[in-house]
Amino acid sequence: MTIGFFDSGIGGLTVLEESLRRLPAQDYLYMADTLHVPYGTKSQDEVRSYILDAVETMMAEGLEALVVACNTATSIAVNELRERYSLPIVGMEPAVKPAVEMNRATGKRVLVFATQLTLQLPKYYALVSRVDDGGIVDSLPLPELVRYCEALQFDRRIIGDYFREKLAAYNLDDYGIVVLGCTHYPFYTNILQEILPPHIQIVNGNAGTIRRLAALLSRYGVASGRGSGQVKFMCTGGEQAYIDKMHTALNLLRENKL
Ligand code: DGL
Image 1 (spheres, protein in one colour):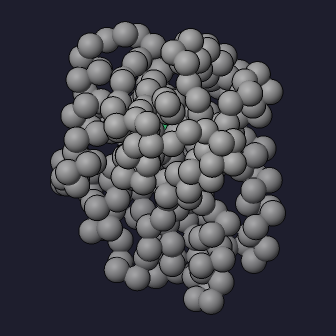
Image 2 (tube, rainbow, N blue to C red; image 1 turned 90 degrees about the horizontal axis):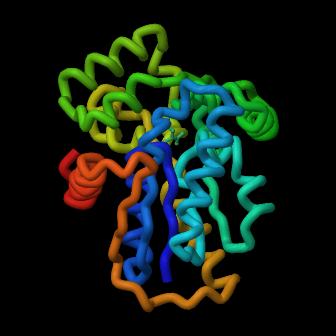
């Protein structure tokens, strides 16, 4: 069987990597919307139509499940995708709820990193209003980080300086958890960990997403164990150079070289 993973670019590979570890006996199709990446700095209407077009192309490949491996795309289109297609669809949202719960005992604040678009959508506002009863959640967009990631820029000094500049205005002693609410950001977990004080935990929604995928697959009775962890890469622009880049990025993640 083939499970589709969709993102604007290479960010969803951080989710795919988790799936390859947890569900190695499936085959995968990974689609990046190279014609339109990044999504996070565009308008909701624009991004909505890009997502619907790209997912339609993926469906023609014969998927048995779809992971919208992008927080921004999930916020905008996951409901519509579920109305259009009858296969199991798993989306992502910033892991604000578990972070708030984990922090309750410490009294520290939660800092959520996500794209501008995710943070300005009603879905995010509703999520924070629902779970943040103590008013402890702060949010910060990191648009340059998506650009760095798409350029495979993993230089510790350049990225470290970027984080230091972005965090200069925050008193980090006040925070207990940083939530990575964009699937590109986990590429930088190790560098970020070096910048943050050691008491701050970094969390993302990738493991939870793959647990939900596994649960959905068994609930829908989708056969498991027939694949071999093969990944077919596609991109909306069809650029071979980008497909090579996706191989490189996935290998960096799988070999833990970041
Ligand atoms: N990876 C995406 C996310 O999880 C979006 C990045 C972008 O295209 O701006 O939100």
